[in-house]
Picture 1 (cartoon, rainbow, N blue to C red):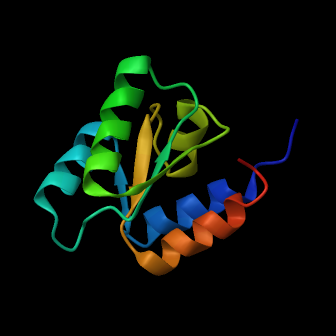
Picture 2: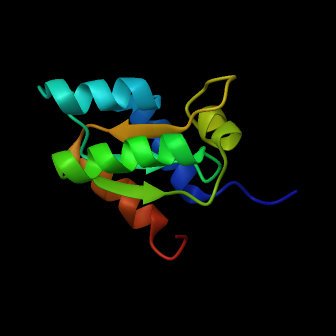
Length: 109
């Protein structure tokens, strides 16, 4: 059994801090409406469908939000944030936490 990547723990910390938006529809809605819950960093699972990937990529490009495709699937991403279902993407809404996640991802993606 392989060791859990460090960045998944960092994503879980964001969820516990209440600074994470889960799911592509909610992320797209948050980008559109802005406010304090506006995504700063979008993290996409490696196994999202072509349609979902295009949807989230187009929105991130339009709203100038950084997007990273993770080397883990939706099941692992969901488990990292305490969900029993798969997640296509999550978005970090705090600049400090986003920087921490990116630092943990260095060399992984």
